[in-house]
Length: 631
Image 1 (tube, one colour):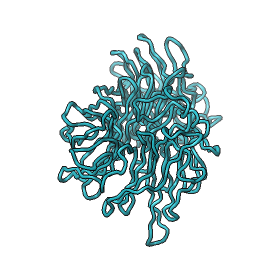
Image 2 (cartoon, one colour):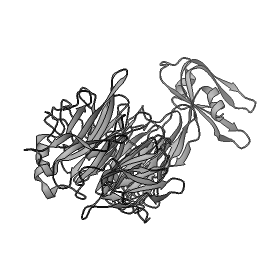
Image 3 (cartoon, one colour):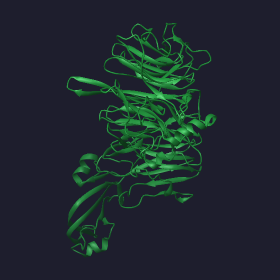
Image 4 (cartoon, one colour):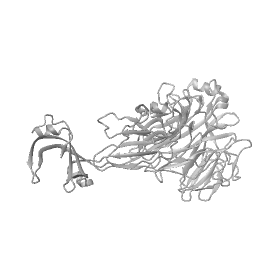
């Protein structure tokens, strides 16, 4: 028996001077036959002790044994053997598609879908027939005939199918921008096209019957063939509302039609141009409906519209965002605006310098101004995303903001994300009330952090697994993110501007069968070190894209977390702890029980590995015996 902290003092004293000082006791089994210590039967006891008696007793072999007895205070035991595992890196997605379509299930497991498009995906929904439908700017999916603008995805077979033949207007690139699934099996489909399956008056908006696989016009057809629809919404009375863009630069309205009884489209308000915004630049970007109960038996539909406009009708302070009060039947201000004067001037004057993918692309090259997507939540807030930084009245909330019904509230990203980002285009809320957004990153003179899917859980933003390599100069989140209640998962269509989208990958288990302990992680080999993550708690440690050499070994020893400052050490460059991101969870949420740990490296060499070791810890001898039989 040996006391590693101070054996001499312990054997010559019957009372410890400071009982708060921890002591390490190591009990080893001695094999008398071959005069060796049985290492596998070693017990480490870390404790405080109070009092004790030390004596020597002559044994029958002619030697002396040390007899030590004392009272332990709060003892805990460590297993003598470190447990270990190699961690798995993430997988790379590169199926040749303009957008990569992935799902993330309730266990945070990612999978890629065989949906290979040649252009953008704008909308993913599950209809009441329990099937997945995808719409967008694409003209071909998986090489299947007649898969222009919209397809049906067969989840079991992992294949796609045509749902109709769309005909575009002459010289105009068409698209499907939005879809709404109805309870009766029909889908309202909106966008820009001349007709679908040759149906009369089916331009720009039509209804698809999933049961009979037939298309029909919505009422008598939209009154303006030049009006390309960007967004639609539906109220509880069956009224469909639409906003969009005029291809001919003409007057731009908010439109309304009832899917049950009305055959005529009507206008509900005009998007106004003026000194700030020229008429050809007018754009209705997003519209949502919020059903508001004004008494126990009467509900009205309030509308919220975002886009590029100076005002709607004559309502003041409705630049870029406005509300239609369903009770008063008028357009009103939200008390603040998002499209500021300076931002609108930039939009109006930069012309060809705007970053565009095609004539219908959303402008993303300005630092503020656009509200691009909205989602109404169960907590009564409307969450709005875009490439804005603050409101006109100074509510600072980069790329995402909440409207509470009475005013704007900041929920913007922390600086580490907002600094590298270039806006957000999609927002979604899952079944647990967590907020998810897709971010744009345009890399210039800054080091990328390489993420584009973030979620807000409680008050904490975190990445949940989509990455791109730093040598790919941007991520564009111009796809879609959709919460699928039927199977409790997220569908995401996203892409880097060049080449690959990746995700956090598989994980291995680090077990804390007893008390919480932290691992020692050793990276060996060539690659760009990006992050370590714990899927069990959705916490991660970010690294500022540190590039390891072929023979380099980097150690991140968390075993002494809480008692010493944890450092990142390279065998070549020494202490590189400054490469640990400021927003990191330094212990990446290690908990008692199972921890699903993985790591992310870009440009990883074929021999690059990450090795994790940890040493189990137990309170009291009973737990050590009961849980892991270490005695």
